[in-house]
Length: 344
Image (cartoon, rainbow, N blue to C red; front, top):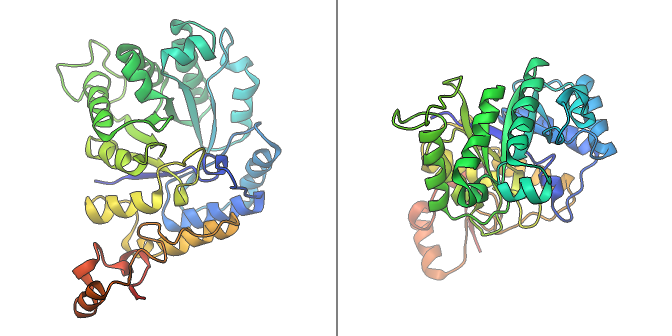
């Protein structure tokens, strides 16, 4: 199965403590991600800070990408406001990107206690914001913020928010574990429900809410607060998600995002999915180190697949076996990801 790779290092990754990228750094990373094989590169949130504004302005003339699409990130319109009158929505248009990734509320607690509006109004905000962006020629990726927490609290309403985005015209709907607290089995249950009740994969589902397009893609966006970001992403793909979001080296707010340095080889080498070309996968270590260098962060030597210690052997029995047969104590050939076996 072909997996759509969406990188959010330049936006969500920079939310991490100690992560700081200049505009020049972001442009360099975008070029490298395009060369690597990412299909979407989330550049930032227009209007949130001067650096992101500069990035989108310069990207229009300086980024000559081969395949990747740049996405601007932002929220649905405000309560009781038309999207056309919302300054934040206007900034998304002015970013002049082919893709806009729009996030909206799916957890009823956030609707009533954070946005301080009612559930029906939130559905309007989602539907009309997506529709406005589509009418202005943008491909819309809809990030369902706090989807899994929302599904636990009020399943029907959480699903209804997805229907609103699809009716508005979203081509991709992304289920987000924003707080990073879900377990893989919770991910599985919720994704199955979305496929059955919203996308109509099971004809017994949908409750009469058949989506307007049969080709809506389902995506996953996880955080690592419970150390399950990668596992939850893999489980979501196992349950049918084909759009995967994450960051290089797992950079991100609090405990980070799903680490693409593990997600990509797991999907490709362990699960048999197509993410990037094999020759590009061999650049994984170089990509990891390139981004950490630009971020002025020390590489994590114990990081799976790409860390310097990932295929390092010290124990006598292990060393003896690896010398005889390299795969005796290694789960994959390190050369497949651009790493190497080391004997300490």
